[in-house]
Image (cartoon, rainbow, N blue to C red; front, side):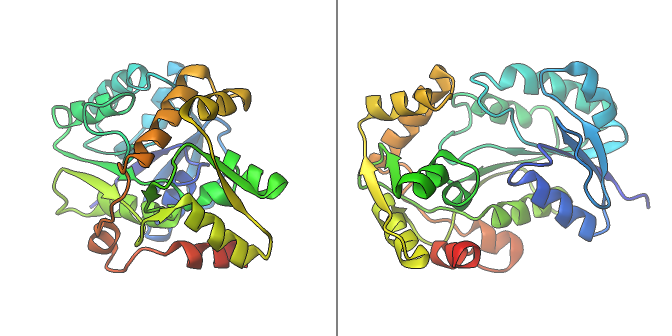
Length: 279
């Protein structure tokens, strides 16, 4: 039997590059699609831009299944993803795994509209709805930049808690969703093992880094303006600030067993993650 080709968009991103490496290690044929067409060991690298349909055909060549990372910062990702999905189905793609967010329900704003359409387009599909990434505090992100430069984390989350999740665990669930032949269609909310406030996060960062890190609470308006000043488009900045406000109201205070059900092992905790990266 021929090994199916898996298309991975956003292949140089937080989850995409991890999904590519895991699939290659398992012996799958992988097309790694990104705007830079960056080479990755064992995968075919192609240039891909959601907003440039001329790049879509080569990305879909021989693809049987696809991992889709929506365009970052796009206030209406459905406008480009849904036409692509029609083309993908016509090209022979039979299974789709879509990266969304725990903050966006089926039929909700942005990628939530894509979520609501998948069941009518593909027999096998999954939507990954991870909580906020642990990598936000250590990699390329406003939180990480603020920690490095000022020793502060700025949010409008108040005392709200989030079960932060490691991108490695998200990628492990994604690979399971792409390759498990018994997988039913599913909506997978992915979290870490414990819900933490941003004050808790600051305390862990302080302990591991040996440098004072504090959480500075902002209002919704202050957070929106802070994000916009950092170069985030106004509409997207407002959406992100609203997500912080939802966290303050308890929207993300939950823990799921998705990682353990999919992989057979528990997700990595925040302290262990920070220790491995910065300890």
